[in-house]
Amino acid sequence: MEQQRMMQTEILCCTTEEEIKKAATSAAEQLLAGQVVAIPTETVYGLAADATNEAAVKEIFRVKGRPQDNPLIVHISDLSMLPLVTTAQSEDALRLFEAFWPGPLTVILPRADSIPAAVSAGLDTVAVRFPAHFVAQQVIACCNKPLAAPSANRSGIPSPTTAQHVMDDLSGRIPLILDGGSCSVGVESTVITLCTENPRILRPGFVTKEQLEEVLGKPVEVDEACLKASTAGQAVSSPGMKYKHYAPKTALTLVQGSLDDYISYAKANGFTAAFCFEEEVSALSDAGFTCVAYGRAGDDVSQAASLFDALRRLDELGVSSAVGRMPSKDGVGLAVTNRLIRAAAFRVVDAKTGASLSETSTEQPV
Image 1 (tube, rainbow, N blue to C red):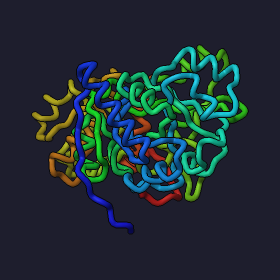
Image 2: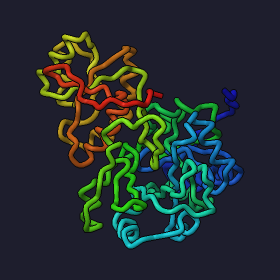
Image 3: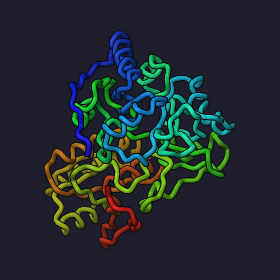
Image 4: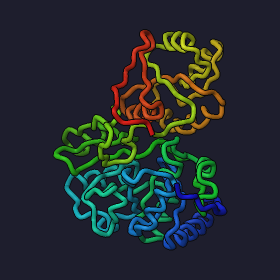
């Protein structure tokens, strides 16, 4: 394994207009010199590089320890950048751009020659997004180039939603982090491909299936990989489709069922830590569990916003394992469920019977 080159990592605050302008200029200088820089978006913090510079793109994979077969998302700050990224824009694509950009939606389209194949893991498609975060927009505009940017963390662990998360993961590995505060959405963008016979969600996010169908005026499929483990050697067209991802060090088991059944299962199996909803902390604490909450029951938006921070706090408990509450799969809950089952390496059980509710995968955890 290549030895990681260590460097001094600087954090620049992006609160005032003057700070943002200075930070965006500094970031652009680094990016145009082929470096990677962490920037905030409304979803999670991204590890950005010039998407047209193959060497810079490869630096993303090196810094993250990211598998080369995991595609990256290309970010733009103006629709005029699209010809640099894609060779085609369909009527469906234009409808999605108008309805959801800037925002947490990534669209997969045919890849332009100016985008290296390494960005898309060798595929002839490319994932592109126009982020809503002002700091991200300013950095891209200062570069005047599209930026490839996966989450700014070590590969496989919970995504970063604060600058401190990035510093915890990548201090000494990158020169610069722009601190734009906590990410408002909290989970990565919805990814939809328009390169299949029917529009298909490859990764659920804040933009829901129902919203997409309303705008497109047609059914939108949900790829089975959103809730099912991928198979060994299977090529993926979107980030976040691998078997184990977003995972804390703590071994997490997810339990489907009522709170009473959840407590019974946890006690019977020797768990002492609970990953639960805010309203349940008091009852679980009284039952002897140490608790970490990830949003409110039935509130998919609050669950998404706090999920990755909560997974990181779970590791701070110093326990080897924890038992988690399953969210609803409705709306943004599909995105929360998608992240949680991967964080748990598909360990999902029925609270009453203890039977596994996940499908067997032939891919080994990574």
